Amino acid sequence: MSREAWQPTLGAWGAEGGIHFRVWAPGRRDVDLVIEGRDGPPRALCPLADGFFGGAFDDIGAGALYRYLLDGEGPFPDPASRFQPNGVHGASAVVDPRAFDWSDTAWKGRPLDGTVIYELHVGTFSPAGTFAGVAERLPYLRDLGITAIELMPVADFPGARNWGYDGVALFAPARCYGPPDDLRRLVDTAHGLDIAVLLDVVYNHFGPDGAYLHAFSPFYVTDRHESPWGAAVNLDGERARHVRDFLIENALHWLHEYHFDGLRLDATHALRDASPRHVLVDLAHRVRASVADRTVLLIAEDHRNLATMIRPADSGGWGLDAVWADDFHHAVRRHVAGDADGYYLDYRGTTAEIATTLERGWLYTGQTSKYLGEPRGTDPSGIPPSRFVFCLQNHDQIGNRAFGERLHARITPAEYRAASVLLLTAPQTPLLFMGQEWAAGTPFRYFTDHHVELGRLVTEGRRREFERFEAFADPEARDRIPDPQADATFSASRLDWSEHGRDDHAATLRLYTTLLALRRRHPALRSAMRGTFGVRPADEGTVVIRRTAGPDTIVSVVRLTGAGTVDLGGPAVPGLPGHALRWTCLLTTEDSTFSPDPMPPVVEWPDEGPIVRFERPSAVILQARPLETRDVT
Image (tube, rainbow, N blue to C red; front, side):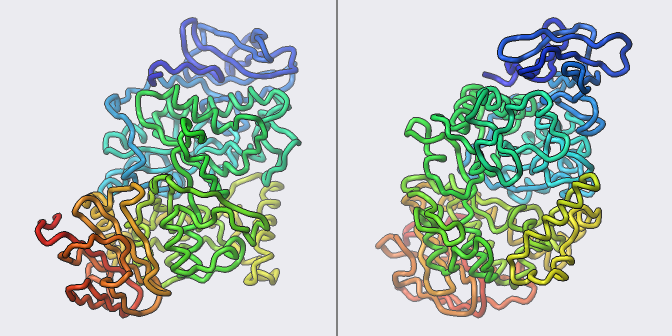
C-alpha cells in the first residue's frame, strides 16, 4: 500500500462524506460526539459491529475540537486523537494529514546496512525544544555523518516535559513540541538531507495520567499478566484482538501520516503475550504489507537476546530488523568505568567478554544470569551483525543513573576516545546519544511534570530505586538525587550548543566526524556480513577488530585501559590473508587533531606485521593491503 492509499479505521479523518469518526467502546449503549463551540445537541454515532461506533459529518472540518460522551459520561478525548492542543485532558482536534505538501515523493527509505543512528530527545536537543528546533540542526547531523535520527517518544503526555514514556495520547504528537505539521516538516526536511527518521513507540503500558482508553473499554488492560508500570496491556485475553489492532494501527499511522522510516519498539520483553502468534509478528507482517513502497525498519528494545525476533519471517522468525543489544554496552562500561551494581553483576568486563560480544552480537546465549536468577539468551549464529544495535550511551544508560552523568564524566578522555573507536569500527549498527559526539558537559536526567500528588510519588519512587546501590544506602545521599519534577532537572538536561566548538569538545567532535567518514569511505568498514570480520582480545586491555572487503582490510587496535604493547605479527589479528601486506596508519586517537595533550602510540613496522606500543588508552586504525594494490584514499 502506498502512503497515499492509507485509510485509517480509528480516530477522525477526512474522506468522502466529510469527516469520519470511529471509536471502539464495547459495553457502551450510546456514544455521542460533542463539537466544542457549536450550538445544538451532541451528535449520536451509529453502533457498528464488535463494539465500534462511527459516523460521518460534512459540516465538520480540520481544526474542529471534539470529545465523546459515553452513555452521558464525560466528555472524553478521542483515544486515537491526532492532536491535543490544550493538553491530554482537553478536547481532540481534527487533523487532515493530506493537507501537508510533502517533497519526499522520491524517498525510498534507508536500508539497515550502513546506518548510523542518532538518538535524541526533542525537548532537550535544541534550545527551542521543538520539532522545528530539531529540523534546524539536521544539516549539522548530516555533516557529522548521521544517516538516521531516532526520536524518543513524542506521543502526548501530561504536563510540559517528559521523557515520553508516560504517553497517553498515542496518536497525537506532544503539543509542547509543536503542531503535527511541524513534525511532518521535520521528517520531510530530513529526507531531503538523506537522513531517515525513526520513532520510539511505547506499547507495553499506558501512562499514569490522562489515559482515557479505560473509559471507553475495560479490555485495554488485563490482570492476566504483571507489568512494571501498572496494569499490563491486554494482548492475549478477552477481546484482545481489538487492542492488538489499536496498537498496530498506531504504528501504521506514524509510518503513513508522518512518513517515518521505522519504529523503535520500547521494552518488547514487557509485551506479555501468550497467544499462538505474538503481537510483534502481527505488527511486522502488517507493516510489510501496508508499507510496500519503501524500506521501513522495525527495531526492538529487548534484554532477552532472542534470536528468533530478528530472524526473517520466511525462516520462522518474527521478522523484525534489529534489536538493541545491551551486552556490548554493559561489558565495555564494566571494563572502563568499573560499574558492578544491578545488571552489571552479570559482566566481568574483560576484553575476552567484549571480543565475544562483538563476534556474536551479544554475550548471553543461554547462560544463567546472576542478576535475573535464570538463563538468558539464545544462539544468534548466522544473523548479520548489522541487526544488532550497539551503543556506548543511550537515554536509559545515562538517564537511569542517579545524576544522569554521561560516560565521559566517569572515565578519562583517552579512554573515551578509544571506546568511541571500538564502537564506530565494529560491524554492528552504531547508535549515538545526542551530544555524545562532542562529549557534552550536560547530563541527561530523568524528568517529569505530573500533578502534585503523582509527582510526589514519582520523586519518592525515583529515589527508592537506588536504595540497593552502595553509594545511596544512606537516605541523605538519596535525597541529593535530582527531583524529576523540578524544572531545574529538565533544564540541566538541555544540550549546550556553545560547547561543541570549544576546546576539548571540538577535538572530540573532530574524532567522531573523522571516524564516521572512514566508516562511509572504506569498503571494509561498510561490509556487515558474517565472515568479513574477526575480533580478538590481544591482552587484558586491548581488543583488535579486523574488517575485510576484497583487498581492503582495516584493523582497529583499541587499548581501552592502561599501557602496553600489541604485536600484530602474531595471532592478535584474526583472519589476515597469508600473502605479504603493506600497512599504513589511517588514524590514532592521540593525533593532536583529536587530543589536546597527545601521547601517541609508537608503531613499528617489521615485515611480520606492525607492533604498537601504547603509552595510555588509545586506538590505532591501520589499513593492510596486498603489496601490488594501491591505497584507498
